[in-house]
Length: 286
Ligand SMILES: Nc1ncnc2c1ncn2[C@@H]1O[C@H](COP(=O)(O)OP(=O)(O)OP(=O)(O)O)[C@@H](O)[C@H]1O
Figure (tube, protein in one colour):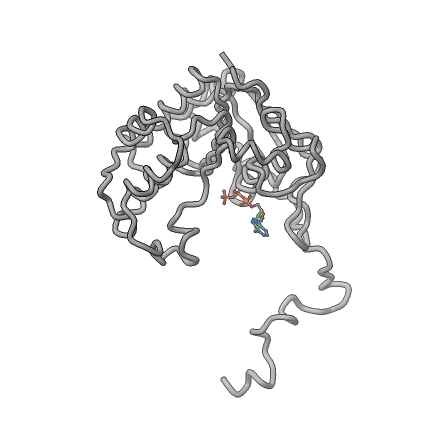
């Protein structure tokens, strides 16, 4: 089944954003080819960060630490350039405009954007346009968030990826489009051996869709299991109730202080460096 060879392997990974406490320390994960793995965790647990690392957007450790399709996710740039490794994350409405309200800087049609992707197979393109119910005449700065998202997804899927990383991409989609898209992904895994990792908080219909489940809490892998082997799922109403019970039973870990911040030992306050700190100068504005 799996023609791709090599799924995802993360070995003893460490990662911290600049000047922050590490999110991941000795983090390991293995996802086999052909899997549809749901990535689950509370807000801020590290899902987006992990997906971005897997997508080669952050350099983490040496070549052996984050491996995708037997290559280094960061160093082997052909993974992304060839389309073998695809990442669908932030929406255009968030990234194109800095605040989310700024529209696209230009008047482009959906057709212009989709047909502007070189080397796409016309049959696959037609299938995706049909599946996502895209009107090629849509002007991208005058459509709804969900319509814009459909065009973004279409473009992201034009090349037949071997590994696909999805970060909450179905959030703006109506239920029919979402279910059709999930069926399409399933077909891609079963027919082409593609591997999918999907981070989401929307669990409707995913019980029968996912093959594996990875659950992280504050950068630690709490569970990695085949869906068929999860005992709770055999008795629970649905995946939502199982995930809810896991999240509710999380014991809070002590809050990590940012590196270099010693408020208690120095008696200083985190507002000392803030431009909003009360001062004589500020008194003029009171
Ligand atoms: N660019 C950044 N710089 C510094 N810290 C960041 C940055 N992005 C995320 N973080 C921090 O990293 C941690 C993990 O964030 P991340 O976005 O990976 O979580 P998540 O699981 O995707 O959350 P959500 O479910 O809310 O999307 C959070 O504590 C967050 O504050």
